[in-house]
Image 1 (cartoon, rainbow, N blue to C red):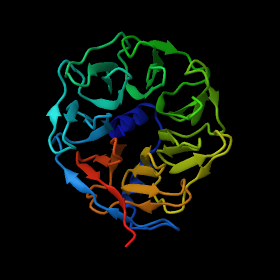
Image 2: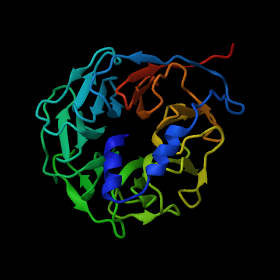
Image 3: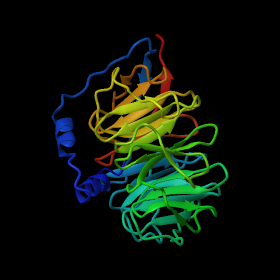
Image 4: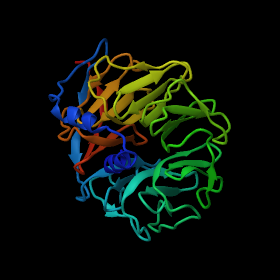
Amino acid sequence: MYVRAIRFYIVLSSLLFLSILVSCSERNTPTENNGNNEPPVKQTWAEKKNPGNGLINKIISDTNDNLFLGTDSAGVFKSDDEGDTWESFNNGLPDKQIICLAFDSTGFILAGTSNQGIFRSPILNDQWIHPDTLNTTVWSFITLENGAILSGSSAGLLKSEDNGNSWSLITVSGLQQPFLSFGINSSGRIYGGTFGHGVLFSDDQGSNWQNTSLTALLVLALAVDSEGTIFIGTLSSGALRSSDNGVTWGKMENGILADYITDIEINSSQDIYIATYGYGIYRSFNGGDSWQTFNEGLTDLIVTSITFDSRDFLVAVTESGKVFRTTLTTDNN
């Protein structure tokens, strides 16, 4: 997820994470690990056509299985055939460094850019417009059930209550760093992962925020399962979870070697998938108690983003610009 942009922001903030990247590159290539008491799953990764424009920061899929890629230098691309072909989706988009993508509740796609803030376009019509918002670096989005949208930016927390047409700045007391990731539980509590301040939560749709007990990590990825367990991925401390609303946290180490986590997604069966920088993808079928690698056929292990389509096909994109797609079929033979 937005690998180059994160590195640049780290340099600007004078945070010394170089040793993390070096140690990641020096580690041995991971081997397959079936975990404990987990069913073997047939791994059928297949490389799809890629747009041919290098690093991909984000991939998302809508309910009609249209795939959208956000690239680091060539804008947005769209595929309506499961990634077999891609077309440029950049009409009216001046800033081609895309850090994050999301959908609103009315058939529009949102793009967060590195310098010019937020843009929005109809999913069915490549026509980007620039809403009334700040020209800033945009790191993350979350669309709430009532249609409101929150966005983490370098200018602060932004909120739209009109489907992204206009945005207001929300002051979060004591927080000097941007939100990099969001998740929400079944009761509507929003969790936000930050750049160096751990995880916060809000019970009023983002108007007010409180700290969890985790207050000192850079949280790149965040997801919440149907039981309310919070899963986070960090830049330097691996993957953690909390089953008590953030009161306590534990590092998930049973099968996970990676410290640099780029994305976390949970499918409709509540299976958890973690994308990493250098170790490919891990998966868990037991709520994160144990993990196995999911890398057969995945020829680039620096995975920047993953997503599920409506049929639970998993799609992964990588730093080198490759696109992979797989089925998740249990093989009990």
